[in-house]
Length: 211
Ligand SMILES: Cc1cc2nc3c(=O)[nH]c(=O)nc-3n(C[C@H](O)[C@H](O)[C@H](O)COP(=O)(O)O)c2cc1C
Image (cartoon, rainbow, N blue to C red; front, top):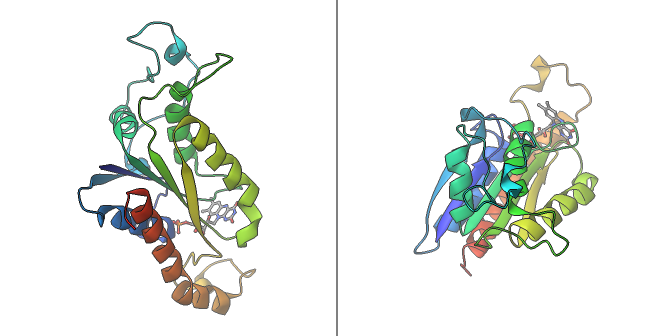
């Protein structure tokens, strides 16, 4: 079973990458899995340019992104994966630009404009999302529901875990960040964040077929 983790956070040490690693470790704890993590910020690529090549009724072009850059091999791996884990922090009420650009290029060749549009990819991988954010937990539920619903339709059955009111700095006194209750943030990071990572681990394990 092929596991592919896609990290859409810039920093490899902080909340999103740590939580995504837990999800990946959970998936990899299931016997018979192989996998890798791709860090989108390491790659030179752009979002969909709307060339519509992936919609051409030409077998050599249909359902494949025609753009050739450092995302190209990642898209091939995603199409071939059995479990895809995607992590992003929330930036301005959305996933990061890099995550969004990846999804545009992964989702769009996966659909047609036919009336009875059925997904074009041969496999139906399981998709597990990891979201982290400052806002309280309820804040983005509709947004996550919409994104997960889109992935359900185009890619495969999806679920998500999240960590909210995350810790952004070690030392809040050095930053213009007076709106936070620093003690509450730190307490949450110590007490809740490990539980969030545990939930991510369990999600990864479950999606990879573990109990
Ligand atoms: C540019 C930027 C924009 C952000 N916008 C939001 C936002 O709209 N909503 C929110 O809840 N958190 C927002 N945050 C906070 C991050 O989502 C949050 O701290 C997240 O856990 C960071 O992930 P990381 O620790 O993996 O970098 C923003 C942070 C940055 C740097």
